[in-house]
Length: 241
Image 1 (cartoon, rainbow, N blue to C red):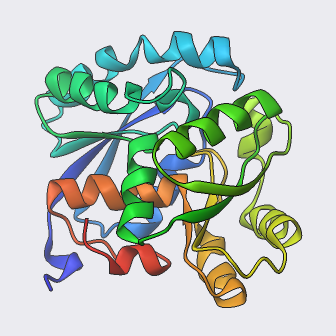
Image 2: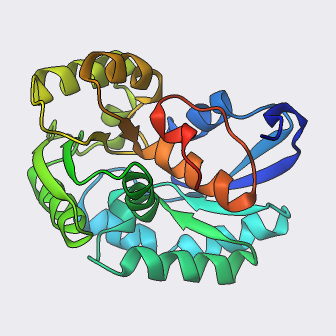
């Protein structure tokens, strides 16, 4: 395997304007030689209407990242990349790739790829979202072929409130909600503004199943697409893209 510290490159990261978690979590997992370059789209509340409006700005953000000669682009917003139902995630990736002139991934599709790489079928999901967005996420995952055993949200709309959550909050939510369900193939912690990557190793040790997060899946996917080797937390980063 290639030495991750010998690589050089640039990752383009498209995030909601109020996201404070994606860039730091990407940076923590990447060697210094792979740099992260961000572009932002306006969003303050994680609601259907704001997510819908935000997605219209994605191509502009991708075009600007293309000016930085990035190697690949990631659209780092889970519900923002599934808001229009099955197929929207793949269409979004194509649109962003055309705009940036390099390969692109979108978080919702990255999550599907990650779960498939883990051979996961039955999944428990925890989120910071409202019930309305949880149901959209359940529908998306079930349409993608997964059995959503359960989904638990915190009911938050303000993205700054979501960004204030910690990996300890994520760990407690998973352990309290998923509990002792021993018939799971994986656990998914959703939202790129929910700081949860640091909780993955501890959760996997306690639960005995793979745990993926929105940022973890997106990072794994975009780096695999760009040909970078990343030493991230959890079982997922032992799998090839």
